[in-house]
Length: 285
Image (cartoon, rainbow, N blue to C red; front, side, top):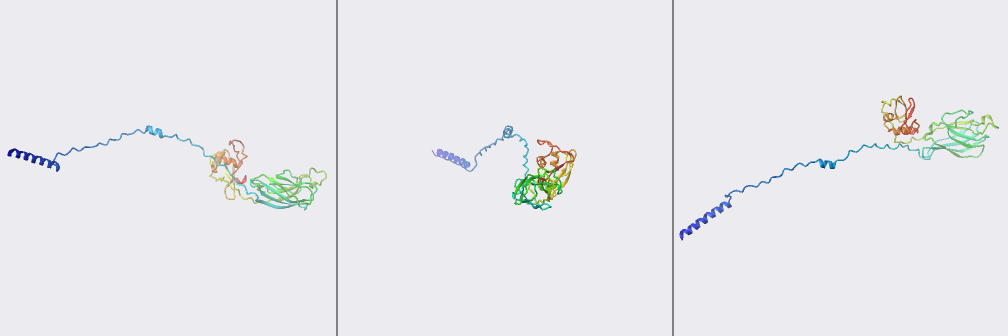
């Protein structure tokens, strides 16, 4: 009985010791578990690229803005003066007034005449002499009236956008024939010549040619400049083309054609003749 009890106690002690070893790390260490991160497989981008790809856009020509020329404001008086024939038989006052649309009106007032024929007035660029026979009736040809002592007013349209080249106002006889009238009052006889002094403001434009220098197919020369020094006219050289000339002056060919509406050809296929002049100044239109 005593021996059995001792054996039981000894076994219990052994179990206690083993349990203590387990509590204080003396037992077998657990094998660590390693988690392997999978290496990502490369993803093919070919299908993705195809889905994101866009077609290369086809270049489109930049629209050329329309050339503009701002008119002189309506009502602006650009020339004014009085006319008196050498013998004092004809008198009237004139005013040249802007219409606001690149045209002008010649306004005549206070017209009186003691000659026995109708009298007209017109604008021309080369002055004749009193007594000459007028062969060209110029611009704005207008009947002022017949013999009268009462003041009369009338208006004539001048369609030129830049009329300053018309430096002369000519008063002349509008008699139907020489029958029954003195020789000096016959048809188209010049009765008075007056110089017109224009004062037209420079009109604003988005067209500003700048000479980039002679080059192939644009080897001509600038023959005149504006008051600001900009090229005003260009003399065409043999072999010049409209495209090259426009490029020389830094403007689209459409603007060169706008500056020179009377070039031979049509539909944008205008051509140039050597030694002719091209206009480069918008205000000259």
